[in-house]
Image 1 (cartoon, rainbow, N blue to C red):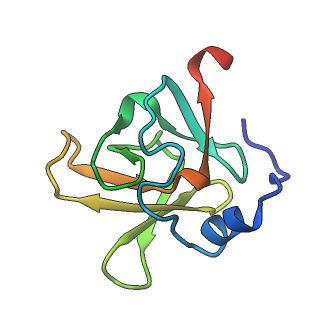
Image 2: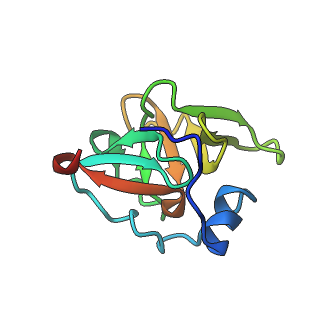
Length: 125
């Protein structure tokens, strides 16, 4: 479900989602969380990631090896060292994607800020 009007964000959520900040490692609510369901954008409620694609990368942030097709935009970060991932619907900052680490079959690690997402249980849809 995607809304044309965006959800109200707290100052901390705005800092990460709109100002492209990063939450501290190992502090996010979804870092060590493995329930069955879907992760949606906190700003616009667009579906982003499925729990079946989440894995423990021991990096301090929720890690996924792929997004739901068409939901995430990947662009070079201004630092030139990383690839930023944003919500394709509202352009909210999610985190970064790292390639070539050989942690999963897709060879990708989407390192996502918990604060950029909300979790929807599989049974509640």
